[in-house]
Amino acid sequence: MRKFLALVLVLLPLGTFAQEKVVFMPHWTPQAQFVGYYLALEKGFYSEQGLNVEIQHPSQSKSTFDSLNEGECQFTTTFLIAAMLRYSNGAEVTNVMQTSQGSTQLVVAHKPISSASDLKGLKIARWSVGFNTLGEILDKELGLDIQWIPTIWNVGIYKSWAVDAIMCQSYNELFQLIASGEEIPSSNMLYMSDAGFNVPEDGVYALRSYCEQNPEIVSKFVAASKKGWQYAYENRDEALEITMKYVDAAGVVTNAVAQRWMLDHVLDVVYDGDFDMNLTSSVLDRVNMVLKNNGFTSALVPFDKFVWK
Image 1 (tube, rainbow, N blue to C red):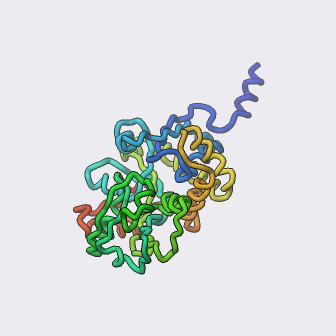
Image 2: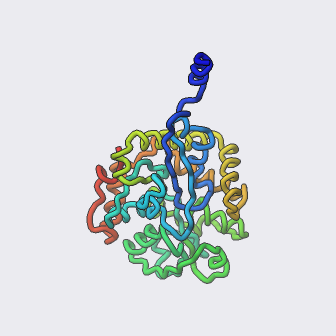
Image 3: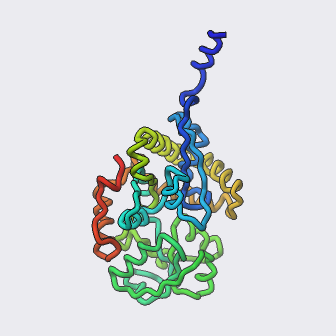
């Protein structure tokens, strides 16, 4: 019997015993935007690190940062600017991983846009909640006097010509417009990156107190997540299949065509030549100056406090 038990212990996978329970909460409903984490869980990369990770998607009525503060999750995601503004307002938030390495935001207009100055005085639809800061910065810095119209992302507001333009993510709302039958020439699109505002978006965040108390868990979660993102990049058909498993389980209204578009666009932003997925001091400095110069923050967000190393 003892020999049998010893053999079982040898054959059991690494991380089978005493796995650390971790709750990861992406900031939106299931979709290919979070594919790297789905792959890390489904392919056993978290388990290999000795982590028992549970992915919980939030209700749309509660910020995942509130869930983080209340201990309902240990890791969450959000845009870099959103996290920096939270930090500037006193939130204990720390960047542990920066998946996005560039901006996917753009303005789609009913007329050609040769430069950002062509947006002056236009009526532009945007999200009714969250992630609007980049457009506001563009507006303020260039004195465009844009009339912002809140929307809950029914593309009908654009299709009906109720607005002159609409703000989109290239991996999401742009596809919705194209899928609805809109013919959008490239001359009618202005990417924030081309306007001089190439600000990275999604990153992973935790409370600094949690990181200080659990540095090994943080390191293991990040390592496994990076492995999931790289696997998704190299195995896109399988990545789509697993994404649809999460989408269907949550009853999200979408389809494989839309999720494949999102998958490819998100992975193109994630991949910048390697999978280090770090937030560098030069990038933080650049975004710091954009926020401070336009009155969104009163002080610079310090790299050594905001980024976990």
